[in-house]
Length: 156
Image (cartoon, rainbow, N blue to C red):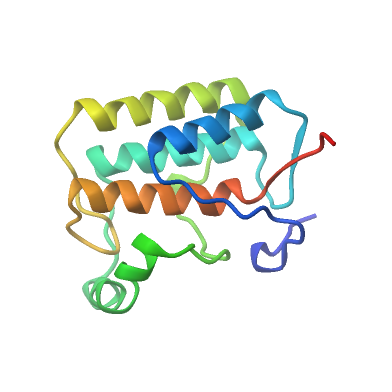
């Protein structure tokens, strides 16, 4: 059964200040008994986050139409860098992950985060356009908070 992410019940409140914070939470969830209250497994979430983090260096391979980018930059950029990203955005086919094991997703995410510290090149965001390295970090952390909020520990 497909869940409307806007209506998902039981999500966690998650806030990351750094990639290290994010990886600590992800790694704890990866070894715990967890479930998700959305449509993706933890493995899929981790792979999707890795794909997104990698796109900050490699590019997304597409860009939204100019009027959409203009509106997003004007009305949404600051919010998406500082506040929780609301659930319910549809991702593109390119960023929809196949079923992936937790181990594979975690390895991909660790590699993507490691690249952030080693490579200085940053690609434009497909909706917001040019981002500094810090803006990409902020966006990636807000994006990870959104997806990881759907991962719930079943341990008491």
